[in-house]
Length: 149
Ligand code: ZN
Image (cartoon, protein in one colour):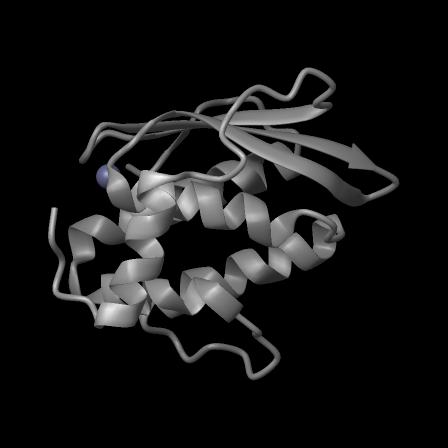
């Protein structure tokens, strides 16, 4: 799948979709949630090991398109070591980036800024945000399956 993204951003996303980080089980996870995006068929399970309000480890499993897989890979990289509150803030920043809202000036997106180009493809926005919605459900210990619809 080729998207008309800026070349640099496209490379970051392609790299993470081809070689996803943090994919696999997390046997000592104490929080998890499942997400489903029926428009694309993406399914993702996010597992966290949380201690004292901090995300010590984050992994994901599931089957998604390139955008969803890259997003899950970069999301798990981004939230490891953060507090649950910081992860929630980053969720808001990422959501704003993808929906075109004015991002909070405190948002430091780092590599996640690569997803700004996805905004041009509304149907793909849900692919990119699914892992984040699932993360949020896991952080809040909501065990229902999260759906983008
Ligand atoms: Zn997708």
